[in-house]
Image 1 (cartoon, one colour):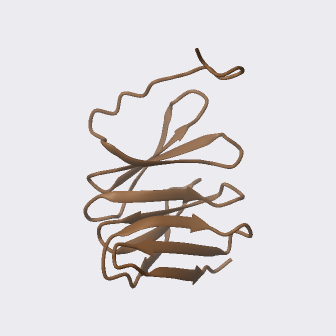
Image 2 (image 1 turned 45 degrees about the vertical axis):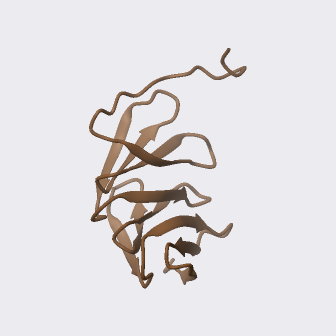
Length: 130
C-alpha cells in the first residue's frame, strides 16, 4: 500500500540508469544521477521532467540539494563535484581535487558549504561564493 497522503508515480527514463537520488527539503524536486554523467531534476509530485544537467564525464554518483532548494551539488567519476543552479540549469562551480571518483556530497545547513567524499578516502570541505 502507498504511504498515506502520497500518490506513487513511475518515471520511465530508459536512457538513464540511476546511481543516486536526492529529494529537496521542501519535497518539491527529486534529482537523479546517472551512469553516463547526466543529472535529471524532476517534479517530485508529478514525476514530470524539469532540468537535464550535463557536465560530468563518466558516471554521476551523488547529489544533494541546498537547504533553500536553489542549488544542487553532484559528484562523479570525473573526480569533480559540480554545483548547479536548479532554476536555470547553469553550472555555478566545478570543484576538483579528489584523486578518485566523488562518491558522496552534502550541503551544510547554511547552504554556503559543501562537503565531498571521494574514492581516494578524502573528505573535502568547500566554501561556496554566495
